[in-house]
Length: 229
Image (tube, rainbow, N blue to C red; front, side, top):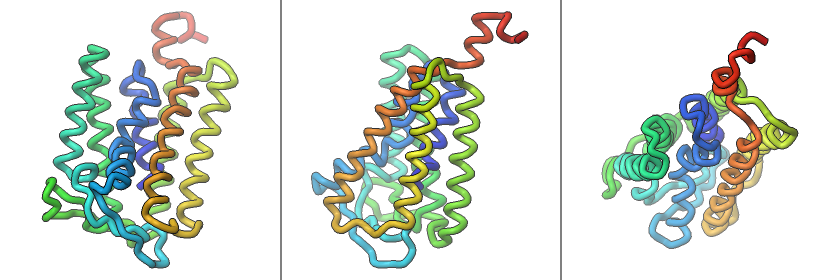
């Protein structure tokens, strides 16, 4: 899953309005932000798998530290705890932790049985939605659409950056998703790792556009007259 993870981050803004969308992007995609680093360091391994199904072109040989259930829970607790220490905001900490764990949960539905439960990687799970490409695209696109709607309902652009910056972000993410489906497979494993590092661009992009938007609910609370207009 790809844009489905960003859908969680977008939707989570409504639950944690004082939390930057950039930070929510990091949380929801944390496992995939960590994975390319471990891949390039040789700690985790993946193989290219020749198949007509674009969702199954990678064989995840070993990635227990980034994508095991145990690992995701540990990262969630650590990430959420760090947010609480810095912000002293229980809700934000819980939302961030939930976003981190949500990544593994969504992957459980899409992956074939390759998601490890523990660091040993012996037991693996996956419900295999990727075996049905059309269903995968429909489900993930619907999730993405819901996430966008919830974010737009909760926020309002304060200037052109907030408007066009946000819509260009969600549009580019969707085009990237389409390109991974219809485009050629990656030439080698190292390219996968370096391309994965580029996901940080979307974190900065989200942080930047979100800074130019304001929460609609918060604005109404601060200005009672706004709720009447």
